[in-house]
Length: 459
Image 1 (cartoon, rainbow, N blue to C red):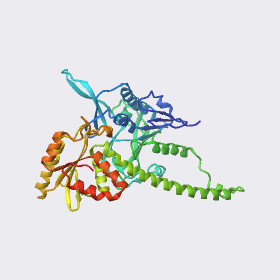
Image 2: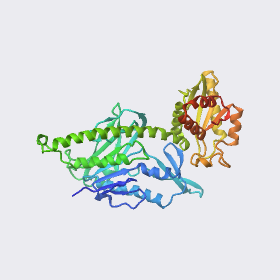
Image 3: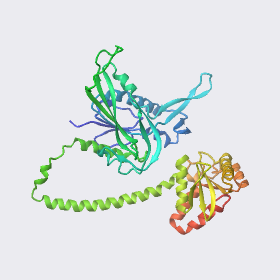
Image 4: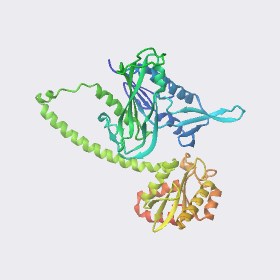
């Protein structure tokens, strides 16, 4: 009897039940393999531009609709069903993201408007484990069966804290019958053995006597082992399909019976010539795949610059930094802010990067002025300041800087002019990048305008 597979996310393929988090879910306990794409939960709101950031990993959902309520209900349902299913032989893969809290409107006890917790993106978990935010490049795969999964990873962004693992809800669920013990295995780690992907297996032990007795104990040898819950990072939370394909293939590989070693000594007429042709075709395919992969990498490198037109925060800052570097500017860290300094022809400028859903304001410019004064106070050196703003970042380009959609407000322009600060919109920076890609000879002209311009700078 073939194994039943359920995917909750956006990926669909033949022979597998696939549903999104907002759809009516089947009985999860009837499946042998479950793949949870939890990145899809927050993506559902963020891609549609329906949430506003309140703090790091906290967002506000102004109005919850029926689909939002269904997502919240399904998250609770998944948790309840996993608690039931993990006693039995089940494989649960989770494309995992650290917790994001989504808040909604609520009525306060005094009649005013307040906010209440709508849902946490990890409320589906039957276990609890902390993540530490840190970045690195080296990934050490401890379980060879996941080598293909991590093949295209360029680094890691967090690691798990094993000592924080808690299974209170699992224990409570089974306490009348079993003592539950978690076993945590590292699937992959960073260079200092901090796990970036984990597998949690539960062992079930019989109570030595009645649980209600204060001296109650449990038998050390496990009566049985339960299901496997595997938490895995992603390369791109907006494109998880390739990783899900690998997980599906991994499940198929595990069901196959490996051929005995002696089979290779037996040869069928015509086998040798076919093997030779296959080897030749494989070599050609490998060369073609290598070329395609290189082209896809180049395409990805080009397309990432589009992010300066809609992103915000640290991601926007890194994209702007990379764009300026590609244009030929030297990048240096700032000792007074978390922003950076550029150097062009021995001239330096402190860069402030802002991404707003509306115009860039005078307060944004004032922050740069404050940072410039702090730089002068700390280093004794006076340098220029440039604010690179992604105003109206969620609006189409053709709407920006027209009518009421000014990228920089009038007050922002006035303050910038008074303090000799350059203002560059990310739409202009994108235009400069495209211009440079068409003809690299434009670099010098672009860099000169960046480092010497005051007020609004255009290319």
